[in-house]
Length: 483
Image (cartoon, rainbow, N blue to C red; front, top):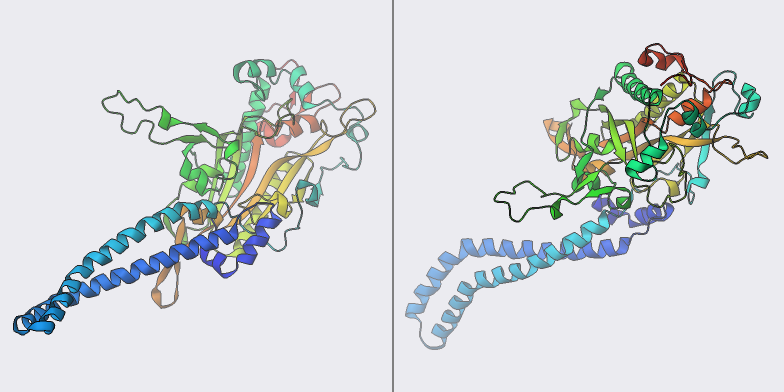
């Protein structure tokens, strides 16, 4: 959530930010609702102050007027009597006016909050402007020694590559038919060495982040309450991508004691980021604790709404997968956030290079950032089995997204009410909203695509990169005889 005070001070910045991200939101309506709410609250505050004043002063004044009334006659007595009645009636009138105004404030609050949740974080000034992913800017590419991305796979390796669908079929690494039988489209079953490679990748990525870079490994729920999804910025935008468990509809009215059953709807998370960020929701941390560096491996679920017809075959766009995710929660300092962003991208580059996977970094443009990001860099791995077909109908290779590194400043932490105590002059301490960042470490089975396709050999086997071999009992090659 954005800072409402900053919105009041510079609404043009948020209008421009929403326009750059192609996210419609009525900033003027927010300001009008905010003005109405503040006007009503000011009036209520004034009335309560008057209530307190009357409570302190009315007793002695009533006593004085009552004494004067005993000695007054005629018009004077009538005037004093009227003043006494008005003075005694004033508290009730004030209470009635307050009671009339409070529901008006209560009615404005949900409207204001609903609109505020739709306001995106403005993109950083150095993010390129563009309508969508086609305007993203390549900032770097890397390939292992002996492999040139300017040449085709066949030119580099001397044979035509198979797609990952062909490799998993020939090497018996996955069973798509039984996966679809069990769970419908975009489903799969990893088998034999396919499952072992999947588990080896996840373990390698987790150990890499914990052993080499000091991240704390944490398990998190993948079934969470709505406030965790709202707090991390996945709702209201993106709600259509989440699987919803309608627990509130499952209460048993005939049960003698149904406490705690079905009291909250739940949602399956599409990333471990939700759980890692939600850990400290509504907490005040000490500055000395920061930065927090967390890594988790979790099963992720995405409905892939709007992706009909896109990548329906194979392991690229699926409903369920496992992902190692990294999150950093740091001080509210832009320079520190930017520094961590670079570091987190660097960690992924180390992993990709250790696994000998060609890749490129893409600076996402404003229209491809999404509501919660001030900046985002996608990391795309080279996949020989993707891309436009050649004259023989075989794909010529293309990059495919495997990682996404985001810088969010205080957007998530403000929504999650996650703060820290910052030291200030005079020994005082103030609470400040933290900054947060996240990046995929490795997601599988999608990552099996570049792993298998880049390391396939002419005889149909797949070479296992040296970094993974300790997690596969020293195996160096995946062959068709492996089961």
